[in-house]
Length: 318
Ligand SMILES: Cc1cc2nc3c(=O)[nH]c(=O)nc-3n(C[C@H](O)[C@H](O)[C@H](O)COP(=O)(O)OP(=O)(O)OC[C@H]3O[C@@H](n4cnc5c(N)ncnc54)[C@H](O)[C@@H]3O)c2cc1C
Image 1: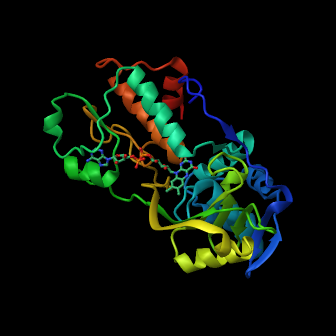
Image 2 (image 1 turned 60 degrees about the vertical axis):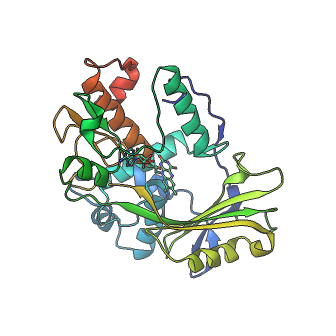
């Protein structure tokens, strides 16, 4: 999609090899690589299934279920698998397996700046630091609100019931160098923890230095992440230049539940909504993009929005 919009992003697929591990009972264990095959080979998904309901039908072994949960968490960011729609969760895993994951040079900021530059080229006016407080001030007859659900509720007075937000605690470490014996990628099996040395693949740190991201799916205390780092990055504290803890980051305003997410035209066809909590397609950034394109397709006849046929089809196809 980004390439289709003329953006060139430098990115690399992570390949931690033997430096990837699972962690259980505070011990490093070998990473089991065929787990995602078990997941994507299973055809037995019903539309009302949550991931936990589906997992319960796949195996009676709690150990296997615990390992399978790690794959759902890392692909979907979701911690509460009793609420995540199993079909959406499995589709996300299949997509990660088939298309791979990319770490972007410069991080997300490169994507944001690239998109902003492309939009300005197309004549879009971007005004930062001016939150919308009153829709009548816009003066237009058709509007897309690409803002969080609580902002849509505040601006329109409409309520969205049943949204399940996904949050995460994040610990970012900027290290002068990566300590010897470090793992490059790790997932907690008995706790919802994540670690990845992003600088091993993407240019996100000065030459020779390391940028490491750790996270607790659903949120958790700083100490737990620091102890996870103690196990996986020996003596990281002696190399730390930057340590940033963000206790409650919003990852997704609304995960796809068995009941589904609101449609882009849930408020009618004059005020459309877009974001990662809207529409039936994709997760995270993909859902925000798909709903944005779908909302734009409602306006395409009344305002000068140019969508390529492929982009339009993506927004409408699922
Ligand atoms: C740690 C972490 C890792 C992630 N990793 C990934 C990943 O690898 N891949 C992926 O696809 N996604 C990832 N995500 C999720 C991704 O960031 C979100 O899904 C995506 O940003 C949601 O887009 P959105 O447009 O719905 O909301 P947002 O990105 O939150 O955009 C909403 C915008 O509305 C603005 N706004 C709010 N109120 C107003 C107002 N009144 N007037 C004007 N503007 C307003 C806000 O400032 C904001 O810029 C990650 C998130 C986190 C926290």
